[in-house]
Length: 323
Figure 1 (tube, rainbow, N blue to C red):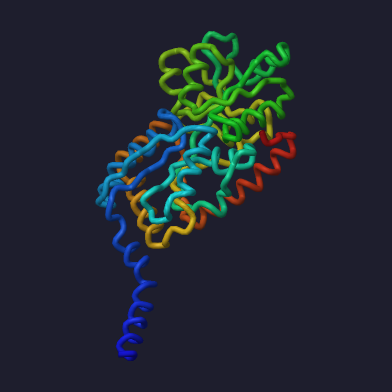
Figure 2 (figure 1 turned 120 degrees about the vertical axis):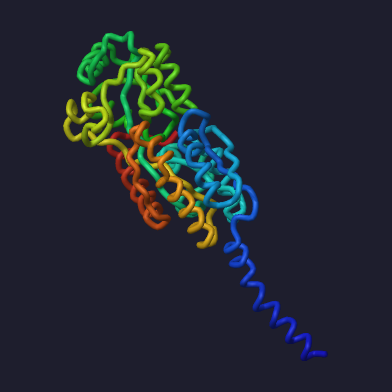
């Protein structure tokens, strides 16, 4: 009797460690929640265009949920508190994971400890825009106008600590101008307010401004990039007026809760990469002028750590304090 009992216990001891591995290998067995911690119209179109191909690859549905608030911190916190089984994942940017983490005192999580990087996908083309009715047609004219009206102009971004907020602060510091930051709950609402003149300057991604530029309501002054975009050769960079100015670090990608099994991370990485290589998704990125830059989980984690170091140094340089 004792011998049979000992054999049973030994069998269970051998079987139990294999259970998580077996579950990971059969992943996914049910629909996946994809949390986008921003309002509709920001980055979620990029996720939506990928979803059919990811579903095709994974063999399971993906249900997208917008959970906006506090520059993405609320939706991100939801993911950090979810089981690390791959059924709740995050689609977010460094605006939340780097700038938001460093700039907002209310953060309850650490991106280095509480999240599992999966894949970094692309970088957005960043723009400086003004309402089309304003008498400003270049970055130089914007700087001159701001110096003539100190403290009277405002620039909007998608939230405190966002890459766009940091870019606006970089522009402000380099130009020596007094403009006031107004944080929004996403680039979608900001684009609409700049278009109708509720705020004078918008710092946001190109995909958010395209419809308003086509409608004649926004004027694109410059892009916050190292060089001109091949598809927008007539649009100058900010650094052409302010030499040496460069944008803050930034990318968009998928992450999950800390402790996700390696096979699950790999499965999601492969599904996202499969989608990014499809004709439909490539065409969407070409239209939106994004820079596709695939990073593995390890590379993404290293990039995030580097970004935290760079933005910390930037905050000290321009005396930007957490709020």
